[in-house]
Image 1 (tube, rainbow, N blue to C red):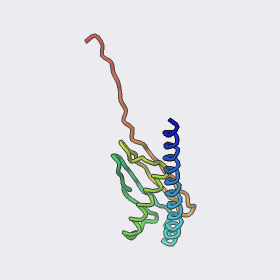
Image 2 (image 1 turned 60 degrees about the vertical axis):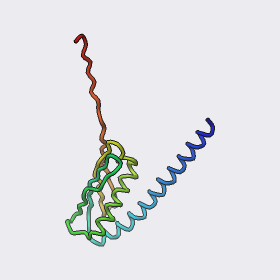
Image 3 (image 1 turned 180 degrees about the horizontal axis):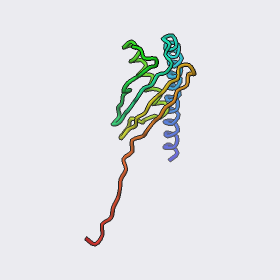
Image 4 (image 1 turned 90 degrees about the vertical axis):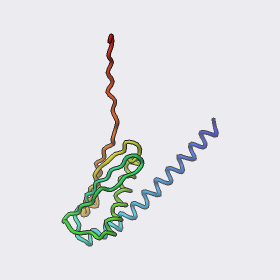
Length: 130
């Protein structure tokens, strides 16, 4: 039993380190994207994401004022948005999944996530004396 507790603690430490490393990398990426988007005079960025059955996507990115982002920048922003959503809701893409919207106020450097978890609900009924 002591071995199982020690093993579980080791796994928790490894997971926590992994998540902290992810968050640090996302923070560094955020600083770079913030400078890029400010240079492009973007005021807000909004992105939809969804996931289930162990996979997911950023379903679209919109910026205001509206302008064309390069394909390379948009792809990198999609990866960043996925990381932001995943860091806030790790594993949301598992099983029935989840979805949401990431809104980034560029001027204030404030990110808001509206997230919904997909949940299967069961309604039971009982029929007697049939």
